[in-house]
Amino acid sequence: MAEGFYDEDMARRQERLAATPDMAAQRRVMLDLLGLGAGERVLDVGSGNGIFAREMLEAVGETGAVCGVDSAPAMVEMAARICPNAKFLKGDATALPVEDEGFDVVTASQLLCFVADNDKAVSEMFRALKRGGRAVILDSDWGSLVWNCRDRALMDRTIAMLTGPYADAHVPRTLSRRLTAAGFEIAERRVHAVVNWQPDPDSYAQQTVGFIEPMMEASPEFTDADWETWRADQEETAAAGEFMEASPEFTDADWETWRADQEETAAAGEFMFSLNRYIFSAVKP
Image (cartoon, rainbow, N blue to C red; front, side, top):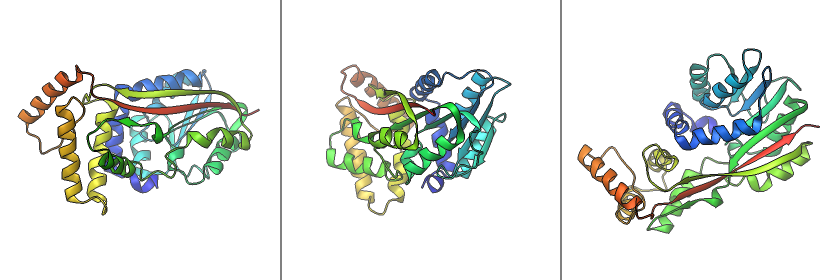
């Protein structure tokens, strides 16, 4: 599903999302858990835009190496541009195009949600690791999402569409069992919350909205009337200090008014977006 979902337009949106402070903070947490050392070989499964690969390559130094695997050609192309000193391969997480026991570290962020056979994907990560190697896997449970709104039923439909490309929107609930079944020993489990109290343009919440509009337009079940109702709902919630989407139909004056409104209403503490991401650290004995 990820291959068809991440066309060139979605790849560009994903690059903007990765540049947000929220995602930069997430990568710092991942790097801390990985504890990369000079000379290590890293396999990044679902390497996406290559920004994290670039940061990991800096950590392992000139004697180390990073290999990324992604099923979406647009993402492989973007990653090669962003991190030209790493190697990026087009491939499936359930049939990784890499040798057995060739890596010291395997990592995957927001990947398993797209994979239909997570047991096979985890088994492939285990195969690619050397004995004593470690895996660090991050994924969201969208059941943890809190996104304030006026029209809950419509927001629920919107979130259902946002998570539509996922094979499993609740990966962390079963990942402990899958890791153990593959042969891993779980070293640590940790939660990383993405929380926005203001709808800043570079927040994760605001950038996530950039994924919603094209999906609404492409969904036969989400009519033009639904789209207009959803936008009206967001305008109402903004007026109450919650959230509104910025769209191309807004003029510069509208945008400035919206920003001023958000600053005032954010001060009231009424906006909230919160999503839990769960990080699993495991070792191949």
